[in-house]
Length: 361
Image (tube, rainbow, N blue to C red; front, side, top):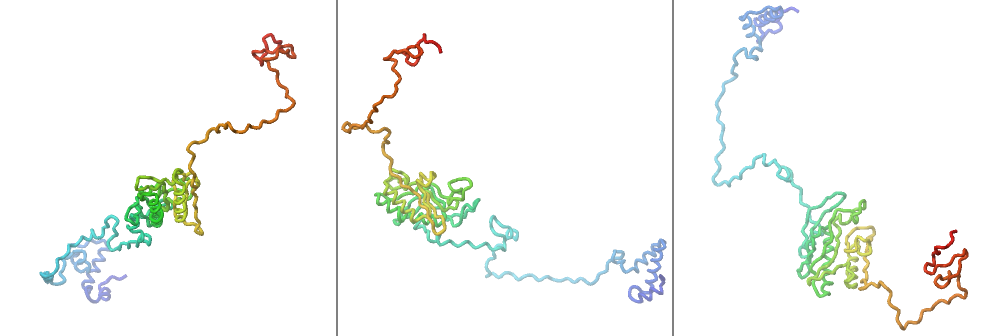
């Protein structure tokens, strides 16, 4: 390769790389290749001709143009009749969610619409506030739940449910209709008003009858209520499983509940329901219903432990005729003193033992 000033002038004939500068640059490059140290004056002249010398700060910077002073326009003053400005919320507070609130910019989901049962179960029928849905283990719980606290009769009198029952709205509505239509008139026929309902059990996340491995009970679905007794305004309590309660009254309650609920279990169904009545609205194929409640008769006041004495005027009992031949009877040692076959005699005082002088066998 030929590094000459003439070749450099032919390659860069104009601009910054003119002939003089090209020659200087060529000489400096050759000195660097040969390892010859250039003098400070030569280095300054070479750096002055190199086009990137300004890039590395070897020369003072040059101003590209004249800086002109400009004025920034200010906004016009707020009119006096303008409404007061609302205080601005910091952006951090807008974006940060508070509790269960949705983040800024995300719309909250619409509240679910009340069901037809919830709209129909007003405070004129029952005191049953809505509660949150329950989603328990194994399918327990449900939606559209209420806490049935009292049933309101037609005369605005309240029948308290003690304690308050956690039920589905449909089950609570069925209980309220049963109390208002059937049980309240029944209590009036007894000469007193109805004041309370004894709730033995309502929602309970458990299997059928609490048996491990059994299917989920309707109590676990908040679709069942166990009733123990009805309370009257005069302080009387009518236990539905008490044998001393008139049979006609218990049968009236039996016919009433079996016509309204799909499952009725009471005494006689199993030993789990001997002291209360189970009611639920379980759905089955072909609208199949179960009504198992035996209305037992009262027990006698005094149980006949011994047979009665035979009357004096009773005819004599027939006695079987004695056989003609007498069976062989062991001789009585008290009346006989015959010798034994072995020569011994009977002992009158001890018939079953031989005398001391008996001969050994």
